[in-house]
Length: 274
Image 1 (cartoon, one colour):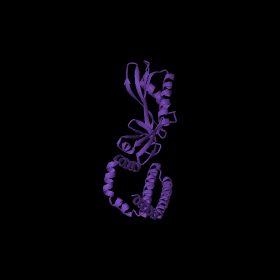
Image 2 (cartoon, rainbow, N blue to C red):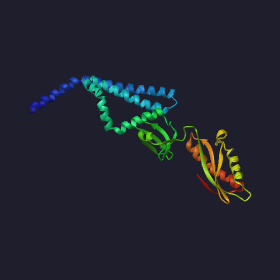
Image 3 (cartoon, rainbow, N blue to C red):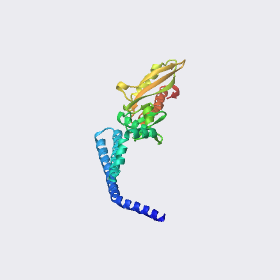
Image 4 (cartoon, rainbow, N blue to C red):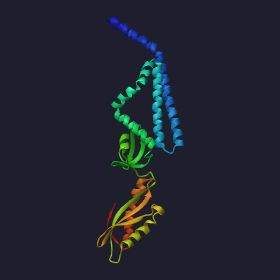
């Protein structure tokens, strides 16, 4: 029995020595193929970023090209090792295997296809401020499986691409400007009218450089009138490229400054609301 075991080991050793040159060649070709895949992907990335105004699509196509080139290098290495039959079987059974793999890795395949759709439809760009469900933040990257969003408090959220594709998505920065509003309650003296308070608000907003004018000038609507108070909703357009500074902080500042203007003109402003 020991002799038989020795003969088996000797046969495997001889087969290993016979396969060793092919194995070394396959490893060298695989290393060269992976190196070429990395270089070609980097070259493609450079050209796409230089010619395309959308880095999101360029990054996504670069990732796909690197995976495809790496797979080709692996198939070449397997063919050198004499596994051409295996490679042919894998390619020939692509239809059946695609169904099986697609069923087994349904989520991965779904997220990959969703990423392809997002990359070409481009509902957002890098650094856009978006809202998906209750999540609001900046788009950092679109990967093969996930979309990376950074919230205003610094959290990095990796969202499945399928969720981003299926859920309603609000893009706050796509057009470069955004209308905001806030509500204030103004107490009126017997001789005052809502038009007087409205005029003071609009005159002040016209002096704020960050508030847009022209076709998107600010305006004020009367929402409710009581015996001695009125509720006025103030609408204005601001720059949304930096959503946090151009919209949120500007709104907060205007709420305080409009109140100060009205109080300075003799009005009482008991309440402010977003």
